[in-house]
Image (cartoon, rainbow, N blue to C red):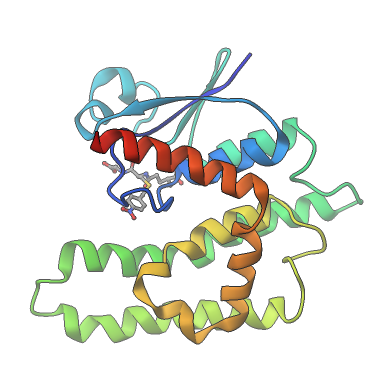
Length: 215
Ligand code: GTB
């Protein structure tokens, strides 16, 4: 059974691979699982057929036989648990990799999300300039802590895992801001992630969708 996910019909990131279907595409590519993508418009996302799959009217969703999932973390975990390649084999290592997935989503992504959202919806507001240093500071705190933990390691905990996949996609959200430039360890970590052939295949697939949307 080939799973089907949903993605933006025309991604607002213009093919930069920053939307959350990218992490799911990457996971499929890492484990060699073919997948289908159903593209949805912003209005279709809020209509009954899609809302039945995703209570918040967002992408990505995942359908596999009778199983329907939303939340990119749950979807990547499903892929990781049902295929080899994203969770290490040694005792306790899979749970630590899952812990890093949660860290990416619950500890690193919130300040990154807050910073991104403020730029999108508040940048013309009078308080934005005053608020920005605080938002940047929260991002820098997390990036600095993560860089300290990474040190000279290639990945977060031994071999590449779903934890790294999730973390790299979360960190990439900050690429357009320039904030990453102060964190060479993080930049090198992201470069290792996006240099993986599976990432490149996933990126090309989402870029092709964007290119087609312009035609
Ligand atoms: N917690 C959920 C998950 O991880 O799956 C969050 C899902 C989510 O935020 N989905 C977004 C969405 O559907 C797309 S990824 N938004 C439409 C809506 O809420 O109506 C977020 C995103 C959007 C755009 C960019 N960008 O342009 O750079 C980056 C990320």
